Image (cartoon, rainbow, N blue to C red):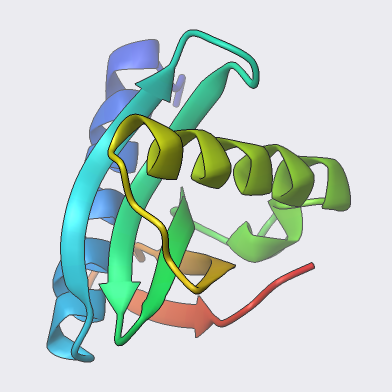
Length: 125
């Protein structure tokens, strides 16, 4: 079975929906989705949330199997540093001055049948 760009995009959108719903159910407030910076650093943040006084930038990784490792294993130190820079940029653009910022990862595993499995890793890197 070939994976098309459209099916990868649909899987990613599904995972972001699952992750956003899960995090909001955990008491976080969703501030932004798929925020893009075209200035340094360039990139995208999947989810920006508030957890109490903490601003949380969240990388969502969605997979249909763990054949190539777990989803959160795809987030290396370079990705975490880029997300930290994007968090600073998001706060600057939105006039936010959070006392603390952290980077979380939500791994969503969507099996062929049944409910998705969600793993939330708090404060990576």
